[in-house]
Image (cartoon, rainbow, N blue to C red):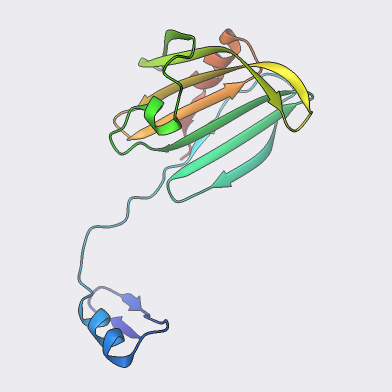
Length: 162
């Protein structure tokens, strides 16, 4: 355990290591680049009756799920590391698609994916919308049982939470 007075940084190395390994690890610590933090986004508009049901955070991804009775809207976003949004979210290249725009960015709407929604255990048509904010390095995936118009309105309302 040590404290770097100049940088006001506390260090603690612990684990199942020998004394020599611990000292070697401590001596190898050097100043580097700050970790990239995952930005937060929010949906500033949702159709009437929706409420946030589940929020989950990871170091590189986040999910916001919203419910309205039997309908749902879910927004996933994560750091794209230079990959396309389709690659980030593993979209089937043969899925029926339609080119659209979200906040001036190219986006792809995937139509009529027939799925079984586990929460309500009912069959629904589900649509997916995928786009990226290239400047921020974030890929977005919006899935919903709502129609194209509503999905585009929700996507346009995704903004950085400040």
